[in-house]
Amino acid sequence: MNVTTNTRAQRMSFWEKLYLPEIVKGLGSTFLTMFQPDMTRQYPEVRWDPTGSYRGRPVLVEEESGERCVACGLCSRVCPALAIEVRAGETVERDKERYPALFEINMLRCIYCGYCEEVCPEEAIVMSKDYDIVFHTQEEAIFGKDRLLTPVAKLQERLEFLRMYR
Amino acid sequence: MDALQSLLDTIIHSVTLFALVKGFIILNLVLTIAAFLVYAERKISAWMQYRVGPNRVGPFGLLQPLADVIKLYTKEDIIPTNADRFYHALAPLISIAIALALFCVISPAGYITDSHGEKFYIALAPNVNVGILIILALTSLAVYGVTLAGWSSNNKYSLMGGLRSSAQMISYELSMGLALIAVLMISGSLDMNSIIASQAEGKWNIFFQPIGFIIFMVASFAETNRAPFDLPEAEPELVGGYHTEYSGMKFGLFYLAEYANIVTSSAVLTTLYLGGYDAPFAKQLLGIEDGSVLLALVQFGTFAAKVGALLFFFIWVRWTLPRFRYDQLMNLGWKVMLPVALVNILVTGGVMSVLQSFGIIK
Image (cartoon, rainbow over all chains, first blue to last red; front, side):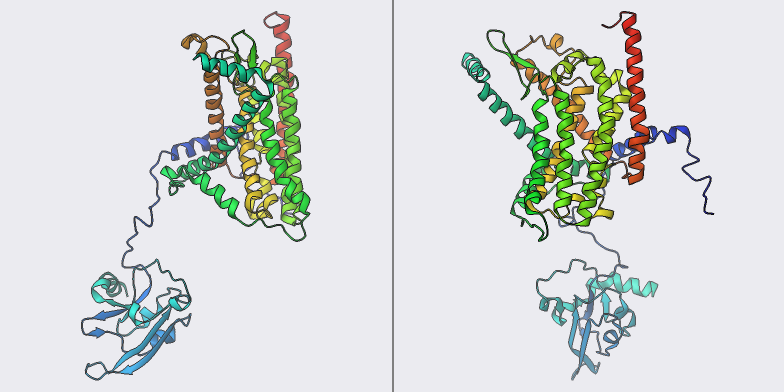
C-alpha cells in the first residue's frame, strides 16, 4: 500500500486550484523584478577583485634575494593532478643550499586544490588571484619559472590570509 | 500632395500592384518583428532575472538579431545520414510558410478610399467570408511542419517531440475552436473585418467573453508551443525536441516560424477579442474622416500597440510559469478547457436568447 493522503495538492484551497489567481501573483512578481537593479558585472570592462581567500593560479613567491622555493619537491609529490614538476639545483652564494633549476606547472592539469600551498614548508608557493588563464596551445599551458615568479608585495593579502587561518 | 494622392490611386486601383505592395510590407514587417522578438525576449527575460541581456552588438545590443541571422546563415547545414532528405528540407519550409500565410486574412487597418469614394481594404485578402476558418485550417496544417521534422530526422528524441506537439496542438485546437464559436455567435460573421466592425467603439469582445478570451489565449500558447506548454522542446527530456537534428538556416527557419507564430497569434487574439484596429474615440478626438490614409495609419498604430502588448504578455508568461507535465497538459486540455469552453457557449447562447427576447439586441 503506497497511498499518500493529505498532500500539498489536496490541501490547496479553491482559489489555488483555480490556477489563475496564483498565475497572476507570479506574473506580478516577475513584472516587479523587471525594475530591480541588475546584478550583472560587465566583465571584461569591470573586473572582480577577489579577497585573500580566493584560490587562483598557483605562483612562486619571489623576494628581493630571490625565490623562496628550496626545491624540496613536496608540492610535486602532493599534487593530485600531477601538474607540478620540480628539478633541484645547488646554489653557490646564497644561504639556501637548493633552488629549483626547473619549476613547471601544467595549467591544463592544475585543479586549483591548493594542496601545494598547504604542504609547502617555506610558504614559497601560494595561490594568487589570477582567474583568467588563457592559452592557445598545449605547450603554452605549461608555465615555467618566468611566468610563475611573482614579487612578494603582490601576494601580501594571500600571505596574511594564510597566517590568519591556517 | 496631389502627386502623392495620384500615386496612391494608381497603386490601389491595380489589383496586382496593390496586393504586391501590401504583401511586401506585411511579410517584411512580420519577419522583422519576429527577428526582433527574439531580441525582446532575451532582453525582457534578462530584466526578469536581474540580468542585462544582449548589449554587445550595436547600441543596447539592438543589432543582435542581425548578428544571429548572419551566424545562422554561415553555419553548416547538417542533414543526418539516415534522415529523409526531402521531408527534412520540407519541414522548416512548411512551418515558416504557414506562419506567414496566416497573415493574409488579418486586417492591420481598415480601408482607404480613393478620390471617388471607393473602398480599398488594407488586409492582404480582405473580406474573405471564411476568414477565421482559414486561420483555424492553417494552424492545423502547422502540425505537419513539426511532425514531419520529428519524423524525417530519424531520431527518437525528434520523433517524441514531434508527436507530443501534434498531440498537443490537436487537443488544444478543440477548445480554441469552441471558444471561437462564442465570439462568432456575438459577431454573427466569420469575416475578420465584420468581427472587428462588430466590436467598434470600445465594445470589445474581451468584456463580453472574458472566459472565452482566457481559453483562447491558453490554447494559443499551446498552439505556438510556448511556455508553459513548450513540451515538444523540453530540453531535459527531449534534447531539442523536433529540431534536434536541424542546424544552420533550417533551424533558423523553425526559430523564425516560432516567433512569427507568436506574432500571428497575438494578431488573431487582437482581432477577435481586443477590437482589432478599433481605436475608441480616435475619430471624434482627432477629427479624421472615414477612409483617409491618416485614419488607416492611426488604426494600424492601434493594432500594432495591441499586438505589441500581447507579444510582451507572451514573453512575460514564458519567463514566469514553469513547464507543465505531459499528463497535466492533457488533463488541462480535455478535462478543464473543453468543458469550460462548452459551458461558455451555452451561457453565451442563453444570455443572447434572453436579450433577444427582450429586444435589446437583434
